[in-house]
Length: 360
Ligand code: NCD
Image 1 (cartoon, rainbow, N blue to C red):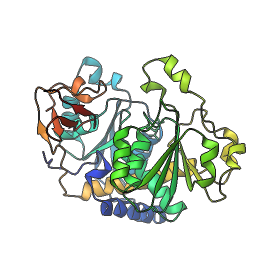
Image 2: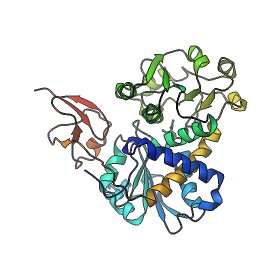
Image 3: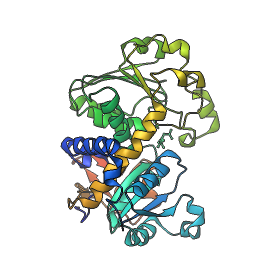
């Protein structure tokens, strides 16, 4: 199913050349923000934030305001008609009718794609459950481009909650499209990277290793991407507490790293990086958040100017097949077409990427 609008649900909706164009534009805006101060005059951005956010929401809002546009939306669904039981389809239909571009964050996997299916304007995924976060990845890529001068030939360490962290999923998918990148996945066995992401890395010909020791990985890294243990995605507090505090970056551990290694973190930080690391010149996470505003300016501008149509569903509808991922949007919004890619006995849900083995 091809939509009438350009959307950004997953970076892979667009070719690498499109990402590179966005990063170039982000860098240009950063160097000359005044030139873009009226680029979106008269345009309205709607923001539907069903989940807490500081950086993503405010950087989108400031991005639009700095482009001369205006904003509407909610950051607490309980103050909107969602509290009265309105479904995602109806809320999206209405707010997209008021807006020129819509930004959505939702706790359920696949919600942004589901919203794009009914929206009357371009939709940007600002995080769908533990699945994807493409605009954080654009932020990370602009940081790498400006601070390391390249997006290829990097040894990238990813540490923390690799299972539930949507930022690292999007980052691996994107960075495996550039040559000679290598991934070092540092996590406990319980919070290891999902196998579908590892398959994507392999399919692009990139290599990865999975380790449990941060100290051992440190010396070889060009970039260390720290993440928060995603408390809200755990089945119980007990499961969360068992994982909490496994990896804590300290000035002591920073001594093991190369002088030109950089530390990124999508933030918010809980306690996985001690505050004393902030003074290390290699700690770039606050600067990274600022790059996010410029790349989102580039993204909003591009979405508003583009006439490109995005393919949202490319597989086939299997009305009788139920996605077995309990966090998939198809359970909460039962009117959605049950669309899967693949054939035979192996199908992949087009909303959440869960693989199903059908029994005959
Ligand atoms: C991240 C997110 O929401 O996934 N934050 C962000 O957008 N900068 C990371 C997190 O919440 O841990």
